[in-house]
Length: 386
Ligand code: SF4
Ligand code: SF4
Image (cartoon, rainbow, N blue to C red; front, top):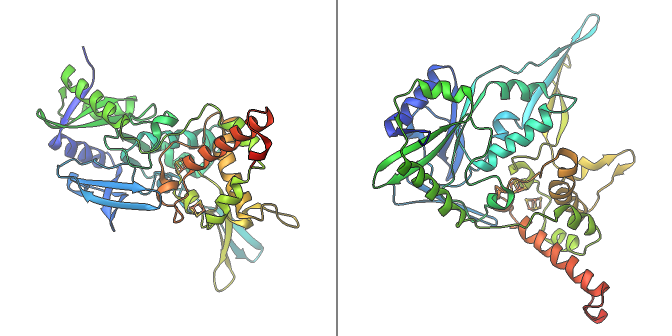
């Protein structure tokens, strides 16, 4: 017999109510300033009903879908990174005292948060941050507190955007492991409903308190059809089996200069990326000079100062910084952390003001590498050398 449960629209509201009743701050997709953002919600009426999105390189628009789907768009403009690993966080405060100064650690408040509607790509990105920030010798205490009080309710992507390539990266459109509950929105002749599947005991506990009906084989077949249709709508794709070798062999490619002519080094791609986690620290003192707060703030390998060692920055050109970002993200990240640093969400493509597209850049690097190899082996005359 098929497992899973069915929630109707009223049932989805009872899920939100139950989460709030348990003390969770429920964060979900909402329409804000023309984009689908991730903000606090209290009702299904806060969700972007009937709203779709259009994403292309350097372009984002929302539009009416002509139906009543609540999750009929791709990944939200911001990822869960902004919730679990905020852009600005106080690490400690130093207060002048008669004996010198006292240092008080800033503790992160343990506020339970339920993330409703996150997609497979963002679920995978949280898994990457779990590995990096919780799974190594130094644990990030602030992230650990937030993550330990977080419930993840994923939603299957039914309408990927033009910049999505989660299928290539193996992270979607069906959310993988890590969600407490996974919903698939079904909107067909059998009605508007959600197939709910449990991933953890915490998810099962929440679901047990709701009025559901058992999912039928027809419901599961409808959910499979949603996934199959989404697979055909991926706007981008990327071959992944050779990325480490390709990027390491491309260190001297002329393509880096080409992309540097277009890249503004604005850092948008790294800010929007759900896996980028580079930070720096800033000290802020009050006017009296008696209190000093140390903050951790998001930083980016696209900023020249980020590569400053003694004597100056080591990546002084934009091309070198783009090469660092792409080579780390796709080439050396797997060696360092055992997984790709890219989940295929497409945000770096959508939010790049210069419309730079990493799938295009990778394809160009592969083309260059193949050309070099063909020239080396004599398959191409040297007069065609680039
Ligand atoms: S690739 Fe695009 S988003 Fe990233 S720094 Fe360059 S111009 Fe900005
Ligand atoms: S590199 Fe781009 S596509 Fe990959 S996870 Fe980051 S923002 Fe998404």
